[in-house]
Image (cartoon, rainbow, N blue to C red; front, side, top):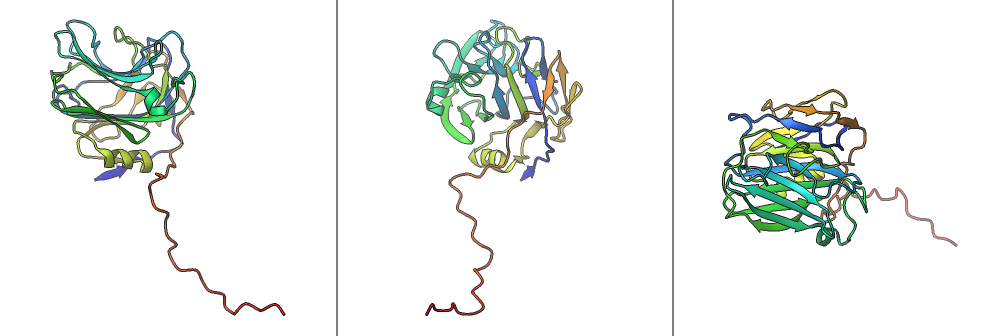
Length: 270
């Protein structure tokens, strides 16, 4: 059953250099997505940056290194590209990219963080012998096959707002809230989290709401104890997304009682 993610005004973490990141330790008992299906969601706002053209914001190891079994989700904005890309490696060389065009999704050529500066909600699910799904602001962008990319992922630590992970450096972004499941989320789960701030509990192995506002520790509120640690001069910001959203497809809420009639008839004008 979903659980409401209790929040105060909240804060976001800002990743804007390649020596800072949020690290979640691998744990075989409580935090391991090396062979299972898994899902990830976060609120993210990309920042203007001309030098980092393929920033990653969720990663384990460097997926391009030939001896790596890394995994990355990155935002590609080099040249004419504007896309969300997943890179997987089974330890024998990079073996596949899966991507969704942001130009198609947003209907504009403006690149996130450059042509616009809005908060966005990203959610992903990875069926290891089937397909990957991506939701942008609650809307599914369709499935991409990863059936041939089902090798084991490294058991190294998870890095958010990546820094110092080989080829892909800092995200140059703010992040507010991140969730990881060792199961597959679906449209209903995404709707609950995006519109109602309600988090699916089945398979939830990490939830970092980033409400601390200071310090180098970020608590895991999933109940699994997978607390994160900030490395480098990462800073906290009061810039957070607005949570009160109502899906346009929802019917209007009816009045709880009929309108009260006038206590006396209207007076006719003579």
